[in-house]
Length: 165
Image (cartoon, rainbow, N blue to C red):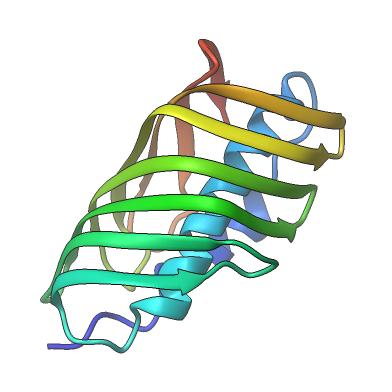
């Protein structure tokens, strides 16, 4: 079975771009998750589910090696490691380059339901967010949860600081 057409982060990204206090860290996390989903949509959507082991170009330079597995029924399940090397992307409120491994796992449906976690023991992120320059190497641990037909929410830690949006 082929993977669903989208992970539906675009709905989340239009409605939940971080603003206000702590937006710098939230914008970094938003940029990481937005890049993660863009890579998934470009590299894996429409491909057969199962074992994955491929290296693809990032949107604005660099590469990412995707290793792990995907499954697809009414609910898609992923268990992937994304190894980023100079992986660059930009979007609403961010222009970032990332280096390091992201562990990404959980499940989602095209209706909007998702329960996903993204972790990294050491992720290097440099570039710009709306609040200014970024040059951090930190641990990341966030969850992205949403129910059918609703906008999702993200919470967790970046660099030992709480992030939620």
